[in-house]
Length: 154
Image (cartoon, rainbow, N blue to C red; front, side, top):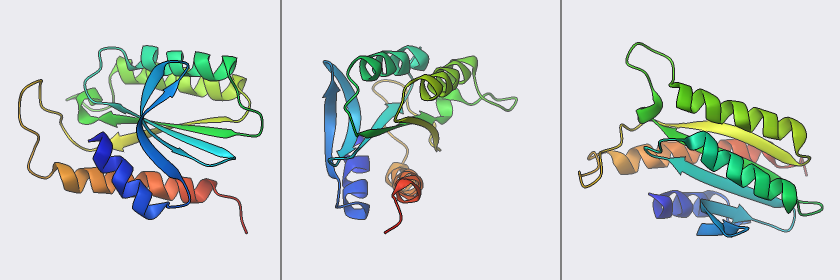
């Protein structure tokens, strides 16, 4: 899944250098796109028990190691695992988004963006749905549009 998102974004944003398992203070981030002035991080929340903890760890590292002149955007990508049957999203997701909003308010040059990944992820060992690549492509388009909206006017 990481490679699929990386490859789709590399086609849409060749000005960025894309890689999987990008490390910030020893913590791996699923996908990253970099330039001299921007760092776009993608953290895919498939079925994580505590996505707020993962985000908080990244924000702590970014706060400690802020790179001067670098704009950091974290896309925290949530699968349908975090959707409630009765509507709305789980408290796990709400907590992660809250941490993201607070981090954006307190860390200069940081933007947090939650993103939908409209797939019900299989449990460990089960096969992905047949249309997973199409859903990954749609997610990459949403992220690409957000990156394009973030780019300065020429």
